[in-house]
Amino acid sequence: MHRRRAVLSTLFLLPFFLPLRAQNVTVYPPSWWIGMKSPTLQLLVRADDPAFNKRTVTVNYPGVTLQQVHPLEHGKYLALDLAIAPDARPGTVPLVFAAGKKTTRVDWPLKARTTDKPFAQGVTSKDLIYLAMPDRFSNGDPANDRIKGMRDQSLHRDSIFYRHGGDLQGIINHLDYLQKLGVTALWLMPVLKNDMPHRTEHGYAITDHYAIDPRLGNEALYTQLSDALHRRNMKLIQDAVYNHVGLYHFFVQEKPTHDWLHEWPTYTNTTYKDQPLLDPHAARSDRDRMSNGWFTPQMPDLNQHNPYVANFLIQHALWCVEQFRLDGWRIDTYIYNDLAFMNRCNQALLDQYPNLSLFGETWVHGVPNQAYFTRNKFEIPFKSNLPGVTDFQANLYGIISALNEPFGWTTGVNRLYYTLANDFVYEDPTRNVIFLDNHDMSRFFSVVGEDVRKHKAGIAWLLTSRGIPQLYYGTEILMKGFANPDGWVRLDFPGGWPNDPANKFTAAGRTEKENEVFDWTRTLATFRKTSPALTTGKLTQYVPEDGVYVYFRHEGQQTVMCIFNTNDKPTTVNTQRFAESIGQYKGGTEITTGKKYTLGSVSVPEYYLLVLELTE
Image (cartoon, rainbow, N blue to C red; front, side, top):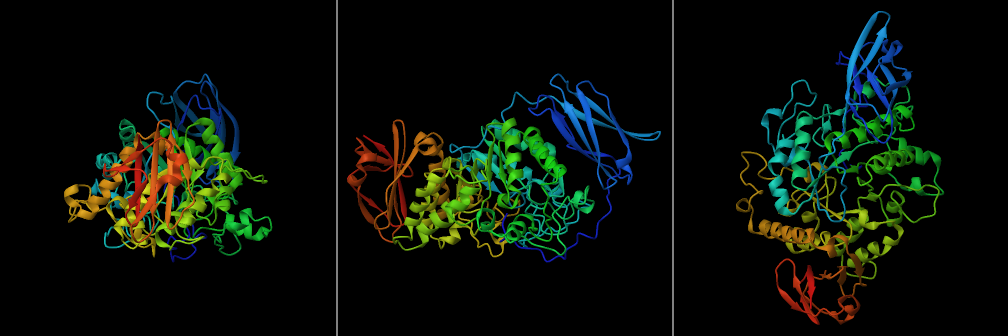
């Protein structure tokens, strides 16, 4: 999520708290597992009793010890520190809350960990990520389009800001399509409950961390999606939102402690400026506004310095990985979080799941700025432990410049070359996620002027460059739209609703150009799956000349040569210049067409990226 997302005009509502609707005692997290790496856990317990924090608590279960009870400021909350011994067994842990002779018992599940199914595998450069917006991809269950009692009852596909009815079942229904395309990992915009009055289609204003939004499905259906992906040897990435929540989250409406949120004498928005976080000359007030200001009036900023807030967020992340068998986290608005907290959160996840993927949204300007927020080679006071980032530099200052700017010393495809030449600042640039567009950006097909040639060249770069490629839903069928406002880049996938006039999930429903791009994408993505050069191979790039950028991917016995002509006319390339990378190879086969080439003098069409597997 980013500052370009439309800001709601609703007034600042924080002082006008709503009454809790829950009548029973609720425990967060609602369950846990034996055998977790950390033996300690902090439960946040919430009740409808305004004097609940005065109750005494007892826990009587073998292997589970109540270490400390924290009465929180708001009378409806307690925090419980538990220790779970290595020899504890699965079962139901009785949590007993007493006030005089009155007691309330909550049966809290302690479960055995799943060991017979794959998860937390990590997403690597061997994968192709597909980013989809659940509300706009496919409606598999019209019965959940509106849920009685929820604040947002909108349902109108003609409005870009209302709900459209897409859901988890719709995604499950089209896993064959994704697999056929060559996708190996699915990243969904947040699926957790957003019980807000407006703009609930995007999912970034969470109001209950431990509930799947009922308009998308439920916990069982999300688990079903995870299982279905894993049966296909595909992976699931969840979108994490640590920085903020929705205004109607229960712990915003009734804050457990006075400092649960970052609050100011008057409403203060973040500046969206990353520079004060890394600028050695920055004013402290600028740093504070950047990190502690609110994202929008509807999205309060969480105070991650508060230990109860930090514990809640970290434990929720661990719980989700174990409960839904996730393979990775994409972390929303990474740079707006408290960075020390993020290091702690990342470490807790990696300690428990060493192969889990973590990549953060870092919409900043400049390679050093981006590298600051991930593992880098800088000798600086703050060292991030985040393994990878969403590589906005390779996008904004790379592939888009390559296709839209005239070639020059510092323009055109030279900007893509310069950006990747700065990879020396990263500990491992192959952990970065590269992309053409996403849910906050103008669609790539529109950005390149609806030029199919440029669009195909961009896809070829995405699937042959270094890093983990991410494809935004519909890019493979030429979906278009400018992010002004963002709803125009979040339109429905045609065919995802029963009465759609065309079904783009099928070849018969696509136009000739759409099938051309779909087949181009599928062919490259399918080849990439089994190509050691494109998935784990070394990248060697050559200084662009006359608008032509040549790079190689090579691993073991395979070499792939990429000749990128960014000019508006065909060109002939003499390959002798690249002899050190070509070696003994004499020719090559184009991946997308099967056409055979003899190296020496190679003709490349305008706005074309020729991808050759070299042959002797």
